[in-house]
Image (cartoon, rainbow, N blue to C red):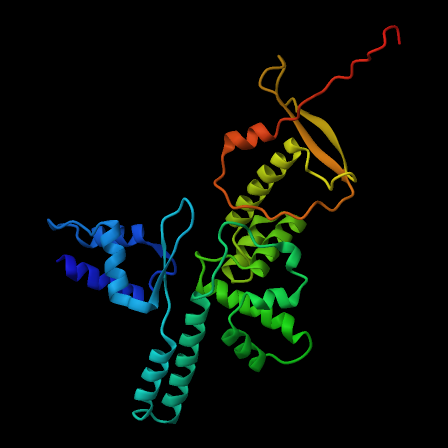
Length: 307
């Protein structure tokens, strides 16, 4: 029963049922398949060893500090080509064309899944203007494929944009590509519309609204920490002035109870460009965000009396 459950797991992995998963996820899936039986799922070390023995060189484990091992499976290019040539003799012209397209898609997908992605930091949005930088995060096979299809002006820009959309669709959970992420942040900041971001995300044109909100929270905590360290602006050139205003809502009250009093605060900085630092991905801690939202008030006390 245990071997059968493991066999079903490997078939689902081979058929790309899961985009991204960890060794812990594999144990949980096997536990689900063993429901109703007396057998227990494999332990974490044994599951990792069994996956390595089964997939051999076609599997790799990405180790990240503080996180479970992420399992990455990519097809062997020689195996894909071998399967294509073995079936070639048994197909007619249209069938052969279909097999060529499928083989090319498998090769591109294999290259996409073999890309190393830095999941500790959010993409550097300052690099969006650099076409070469955006193209470098794509596999050569996908770039070649898109260059062959796309025509007209700004071919490289379109290839980078469409390429990252395809790569993001192939790895929706295990990667976050710069253009997809940058478009989502730009749309949200420009229009403040969750509906618009969600619609574009469903169409595959940008990241999700939830990812944008997580980024904003991480950025607020990041810059709040820099503020406390005195490193918010460029050294020896910057000045920060906090501007605040209050708002009161006294609706349907005669006694003054149940009213709302709020205050909004923003930081005015000069020069406007901040020192370049990447934003680290981190879990959102409401208590930490609340603490960083506080501004320490310093009172001026003149050292000379009677002035």
